[in-house]
Length: 409
Image (cartoon, rainbow, N blue to C red; front, side):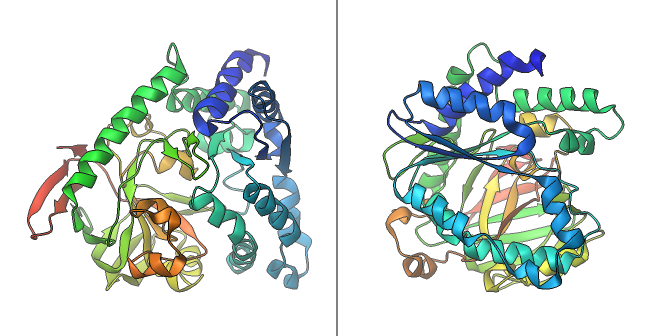
């Protein structure tokens, strides 16, 4: 790991300065896979240098999690650590920033009972709701960065020795996170400006819907009432500017949960809870999925759709050009943080309040009245490619080309 010391310092600096915008006197809560100790320590150092009085790191152990599915009693999958999530929610309610280091083994639960996995996820989502509500409403500044965990690297580069695979994954992470530039903080400022320019244009157009057309796809996604586009850096309720995802290439908004019609096919596999869902095909009527199939992982897809009422609708639609750096890498990362930034995508489930005018100050009932989807899940999957066109449908019903062949018009 010594040869990664300088890039890890750079990643930690970007995480704290660009990702979090951490202010002096602000506590920080970090969640991370146990393998990510080197990066977590670098981020902890940067946070203290920035004036944080207390950094708390909560580690997650993939191997320990797998033991639960192999040996725990069946009834245990409806239990969760509510006490832990309540403590995290209390910390964020009191103003602590939140940082998550992504990098778990994407194949960890492969071969485990999908119903047990779904039950455990549902229980966790219910207990985690206070936390996720504070995060999705930007009550505090938060971000996600990545660590090249060996099991993840072996999944992305299965034909390479582990050491080579890890180095290749680190290289891909650094490039996607703009650490291959002379000054990553400056590079992120320029990138954020480009995303904000795109957001401003889309907000001025006030489209009523988006129309996706391509192989296996003819989908009209009605946009929510009073929707607004977002992308790149955002201002949290505490006034701090943060970049929730590092990397990010998307601009996104909220669909209207009752105004989605047509059919759509995934353009990239979705890695979800140890399963690879390939060639997802679904059909919508009045905002709900009424038909769903997949070439692989169909059982997992159907378990997801049964999570709750909102799981069959959409909480997000996002536009990403085919020429994005992550797309051009040609890699499937088996990690949504990266894969969603390779192509335009939609997300089953929960909408983000930031995608509504004044949304962070609206109640859940007010958001629902504007068409926001409510759910325990938020699962992104890719529907864009060089063969997919996107039109914006104006308030008068006129189609205006937005993307052609996966690129901005």
